Image (cartoon, rainbow, N blue to C red):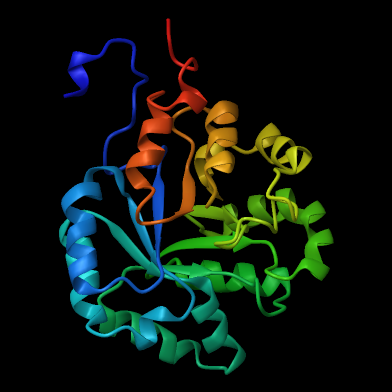
Length: 252
């Protein structure tokens, strides 16, 4: 169908390492997951089962299988990793991942304090058996001054074995790389991409205005995450210049 319209920007094809769309599943049912797949599988690369939902969601193994059968990577939100770590149950967490049939995990420290050297040790160790994504940034407003270290931390986490590093924004989109009014902190992004290839980073962008900003800044193949299940196709339209917000970006 896209062939009918000229001058559309080139999108990367699955399996992607750049131009990734990560959907945040906060507790979809089996039927909802099937409906989601029927429309969005072509445009979805990763599903994150948000925070601790995987422990209490019915038929979670069946839902994970649905996603994986459609060539979508699946991992559990980093908050659950932290919940196991703070209880000194990392081995139990790895057994839980094996039980669910997951090959991917997130290492984060958004809710608990982990010395960065220790965090990198977790990444290095876990990357021997799992595809690891890590996340920089706190979920608490009173710790937002740590953004000054993000560039250094991202570099160290990539070296330690992270496949992608995620920049914190939560599902609310008003923390981390965004302020309380959902506006981007330009300086942080500019500092990061000055020396780090943005293909190594997934930017959490739950709001349309935030998605638009990164597409304008980095192009149609920016890696974007924490996308709502009903915003996948609207985001793909933004990437292709098929919404007014990016309409003129790709015309020749």
